[in-house]
Image (cartoon, rainbow, N blue to C red; front, side, top):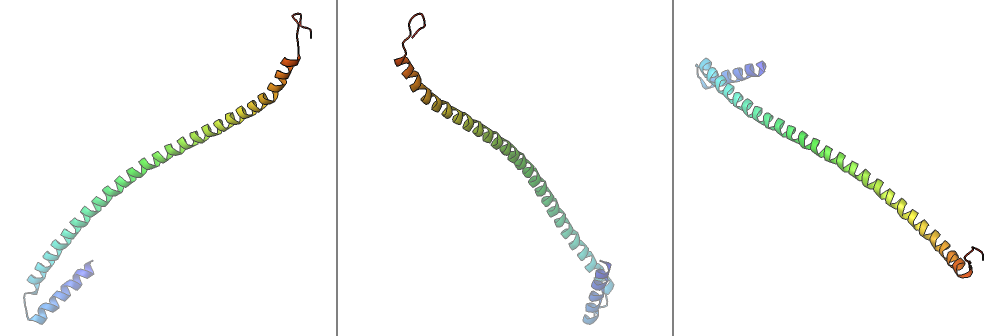
Length: 124
């Protein structure tokens, strides 16, 4: 940065010499003051922009945390639903097999009822 200032001073001095001005020191001080003011203003703007970007980043991080928590909850809910669906399939399949067994046994029981005659003492 110091070399940039020296180059600026040298360039300013050359311009003053070429234009025939002799007040190079006074002119350089004004130029340096102006440049310092300009750089301070730029620095202030950049600091403000940096602060805004930090605030945006913090908000984005917070939102991301909330979204990750929601995603975790959704995954847990999905796992519970998948477990419930497996249980429903199991009970549906069990009920279906039970119904098939009853369909096989019921005609046999009806046939026994119609053909078998029991007396009160329990004999045929």
